[in-house]
Image: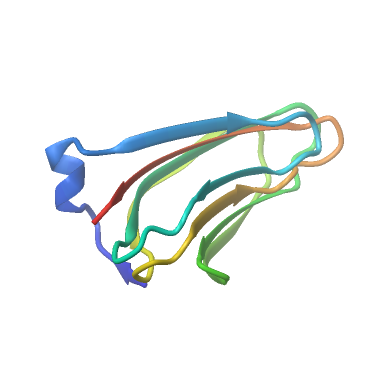
Length: 114
């Protein structure tokens, strides 16, 4: 994994943005399928939870390896600007865990491939 503050693709505007929302207590997962001879680059992630008491978690995986994980314990929006590269030919998976009983989660990511 390589991490940097901001990548050149962010400046060039070649970003793919994806979002997903799931019903209460269900995890939200966005998967970028492996691309031969290329890496996925995750530039940003935003999330929000609405509902009851939040017991959520954000997980980012490079293939099967967890490279970032944090607990989220409050409703409302949150996010990170980052630069995480997967290995060449690896799947990128970003998961917002089910936030708890009666809690609905939303997840947005911005990625490029290179």
